[in-house]
Image 1 (tube, one colour):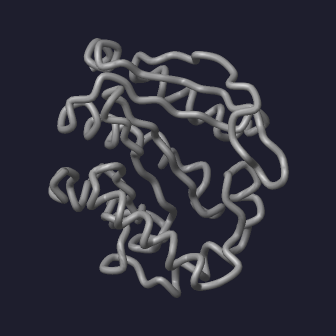
Image 2 (cartoon, helix red, strand yellow):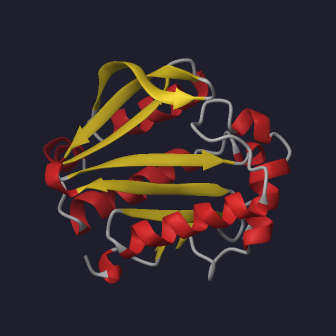
Amino acid sequence: MASGLFPERIETDRLGLSRLSRDTVDPLELYRICSADEGIEEVTRYTPWDPHSTVKETAEFLDGCEKRWEDGEGATYVIRPGAGEEGAGEIAGVCGLTLDWDRRSARLGIWLRRRFWGRGYSGERAAALLDLAFDRLDLELVSVTHHVENERSRAAIERYVSAHGGRREGTLRNWVPYGEGVADEVRYSISREEYDKSG
């Protein structure tokens, strides 16, 4: 896959999504956010990753994102509010698409710093990445999951999945490692046909 497969930057009405790399993010700043940002325990409560304990862990995360981008296996973006938004230009979180080319599908992912919750950024970013998946990458399906107990994510996901014609598929039991256990996840999906009809 060519490294030019994904756009380096995506603009929405209120957000700027830039390729997550050492060129766009200071690793030390990202480490501070991922390790000790106010509310980081709440942010990571339902994610499969824990707050970072070393700068090396953050550096390895960045390296992995850069490799997946270069290999055409995933596009990870840093989210920054645009001009006029509270916290404009700051890192608000990270989002991306993980590709499964054999199945012509992708999986959405996102995490936001607590102080950026409740602004509708998740849905706005989802719309931009759905456009990338279907219009630029010519995929057939985009899915998203959330921890079965994560009510905040459930509400956000249900809003944007419904807005784009998708649906809840069901519960994936014993699906993702969380801490020392394995958690159930709820999966939703949007097909190309559903996406086209909703537009």
